[in-house]
Amino acid sequence: MYNRSSFIKYLAILSLVSLSSCGNKPEANAAKTAQQTPPLLEVAVSQAKAQNINVTSELAGRIEAKKIAQVRARVSGIVLKQVFKEGSDVKAGSVLFYIDPLQMQANLNSAKANTAKAQANFEVVNLKLKRYKGLIESNAISQQEYENIAASQKQASAEVEAAKAAQDTANLNLSYAKVTAPISGRIGKAQVTEGALVGQGEASLMATIQQIYPIYVSFTQSSTDSLKLQKLIKDGKLNSLSDVHKVSLILSDGSAYEEKGKLLFSDITVDASTGNITLRAEFNNPNKVLLPGMYVRVVIEQAVNQNAITVPQQAVIRGGQGASIMVVDNTGKVSARTVKTGYSNGNSWVISDGLKEGEQVIVEGLQKVKPNMQVKPVPWVDNTLNPGSPSSSPNETNKNKQ
Image (tube, rainbow, N blue to C red; front, side, top):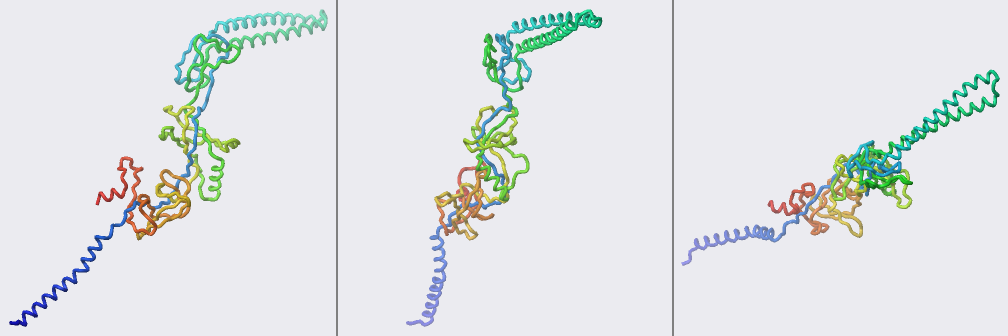
């Protein structure tokens, strides 16, 4: 039997179910869409910074001794003894070698005898001159005789002086039998041995002393680079350093020398064969790490670039059209930007044109991005500032934290 009230109740329940089904469909579709949409690619970005940077030049240099003295034999003779240790430090005036002094002593004795003889002869002639002076006044002798004895007296006086000079020379030669250090410094290997004959016809080289504390570093810079730097300073793009130029060294093993140096001078002429200007700096060398002849890299601060825009070096892409970077705006959109790079500053490039302070530059993830792409920027971490940190990229680190 047909029940009208039951049928109406059935229709009401069916409507509720339909409405409920229709109401849940948009939420289900949204959830399904969210599952199908991939997450935004994370890229590590660094903000372009404006800062004052010292303009530095890295140049090839060579260590030179401040003073070099060649120790040579001034007299001839046989080397009796060497009294220094090779490679040691010696002081000025200290004895290095002894040369057999017998011949020099004999020459000195002979010179003394000649001096005594000349002095005795002078006294005889001088007394005779005094007697002749009285005789000439009484006209007992002729004027010619008096003048002859006066000339003899002058000759005898000159012979005394010559004999004294010869004696001084002999005495000086005897002192040369002790070969001493002309300067303080480090002495190298001996060039002669005990028993060797030196000074026979020439001043034989016996050893070399070099003063290495402080020490010099000579290096060269292209005259073209020097002119460019001067022009930038003149145009106001760079500020000249008013104080003493700071100089530092990078040793051949790549390590930095702990002492800072100072620039002494820049040569006033350009080498015609190379087009370079020679410069010299002075460094303290208390531990004697720097040795003459060593090749080093010289880093010299020559000017200041105010408000220079810098980005990490790995953010710059080099291509046939020049240098470019990838920039992320506030909405996460990627765009390519052509820039002009200046010089390097540590691990960064100075951007002279094409970038403003505060813009976000992609440092890691460049291989995966394209212009107009939406990305998720995360701060870039410079692991070179924290050598103990993991070598993994910031993107991977952020993912691990999540």
